[in-house]
Amino acid sequence: MLWLIFSFLTAAFESAKDILSKKELKATDEYTIAWSLRAFSLPILAAFLILTGMPEIGERFWAAILIGGGLNILTSILYIKALKASDISATVPMLAFTPIFLLVTSPLILNEAPTILGMAGIFLIVLGSYFINLSERRKSFLAPIKALFTEKGPRLMLIVALIWSITSNIDKIGVQNSSPAFWALTVNSVIAGYLTIYLVKTKKIAQTAKEYKTLLPIGALSSFSMLFQMIAISMSLVSYVISIKRTSIIISVIGGYFIFKERMIKERIAAAIIMSAGAVIIAMSQ
Image (spheres, helix red, strand yellow):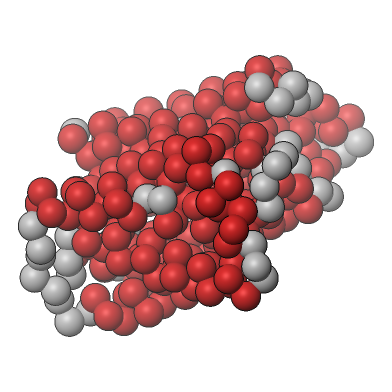
């Protein structure tokens, strides 16, 4: 069950990263935040790679980094744009749809299929997303779901969830053809390199030097989140790991209320509890 520990660690660091990123967006643009998440994580990932040693690179690694790196450049930008556009307690829960997308992408890419109990847990996590806007139910049964699409933030995050259902499988291929540390370092280097070019061209790179004290922790949290995820997916099914990772929604919803004073906390906490129950079921199925 070691994979479960690493999955929950991924969730904890993921939520902390989201809350800190949302807070920093008040003073910094989304491209700088996206760059910081990747660039400032590189020293920690490099140090971990030195400790674990260079792996043997498999033949599928380069195709994986080409596809995974390219798609993650897009999700890095869309993710921060989504956080900026809407409440964190309404936006981050949209990532709960990733496990549902994984039910389609994992069998196609990795030939992985969860058990019936595992599938029940995945669907329970997604069911929790219905409660995010439960107050809208007075309009119609589907109104809570429709409400998720009326704001820019949730819409963008749904696109991220869809793309991540693909890249999560590519991550596993990358890890299987290298190592968790090497794959995480390589992917982040590709994304950071592209965003560096953008920041230089738009003359925003100087802003990172001025605000490095607040941006460094974001990168550190991101590095641990990504590293723990890569270790977890090397031990278990991608769909299970990502489902557990989505329990970060609980911390994000609570943080949204206490830190950002966001509304509708009761129904969003209820949604988070339902999603947590789904995570427990998934853990029991393994």
